[in-house]
Image 1 (cartoon, rainbow, N blue to C red):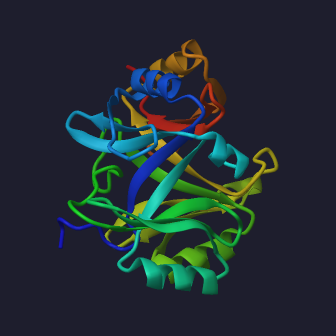
Image 2: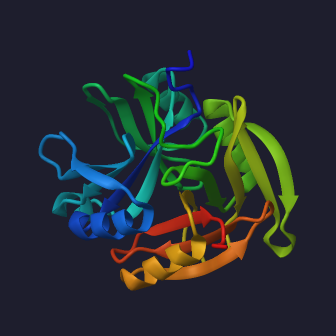
Length: 261
C-alpha cells in the first residue's frame, strides 16, 4: 500500500501563471527546481523537479482560462480513491465542481473544485507511483512542507474535509486575536492546519509552504527576482521561519526554512 497515494494525501502542486518562462526562472532560482516540459497536449505545462523527484507543475494560462476567471495561483491536488463518488460527496457537503472530471493517461482522473467557503483545489484519483511532492515524514528541500487553509469558517471547513477525505483533528494552537490554529492529520502524519481568514486576505484559500535551506537568503532572492515579501520572515514554534510572498505574476506563495547560521 505504501507505493500508492492514499485518500486525503496532498499529491501535487500546480502553479497557474500568465508567464511560464518568468515563473520558471523565479521559482527555479528560489527553490532549486529543474524544469522539463510536460506532455500535456495543447497546453504549455512544465514539470519542476528536485533532484530526480517531480514536485510541482507550472501551467501557462490561456486566454480562454482568463475569460473563465482564472488568475495566477498555486493549487493543490488531494487524492481520493474513487473520483465520481468523491465529487458526489463533495457536492452533498456544499462544495462545487468547477471543471472535470477529466482523465490524463498515467496521471489519473481529476476535477477542479471548491470547498463550501470557496477555496480552490483539485481532487484526483491517481494512477502510477505514489507522489513525493509533499514531505510527509521528514524535511525535504524544495518539497512542500505544510498545507494551510485560510478560511472564513475554519470549523465548517474542517468538518467538510474530514467528511470528504477523512482528515482528523490534531493539536490546536491558540493564536490570540487570530484565533485557533487547528492542525489536521491524514493517517499517520500531520498535513497542515486551518485558521480564520484575516481581513488582509481577500478570499478563503489554500497556502502551500515550500522548504528552503535559508529563509533570509530566500527573502533576498524573492526581492532580487521581482517578487514581493508580504509577511515575514516570522519565527514559528520549533525555531523555523516562514514568509508569505507574491511572485512577479501575482500568485501568492509561502516558504519555510531555518535562519542561516
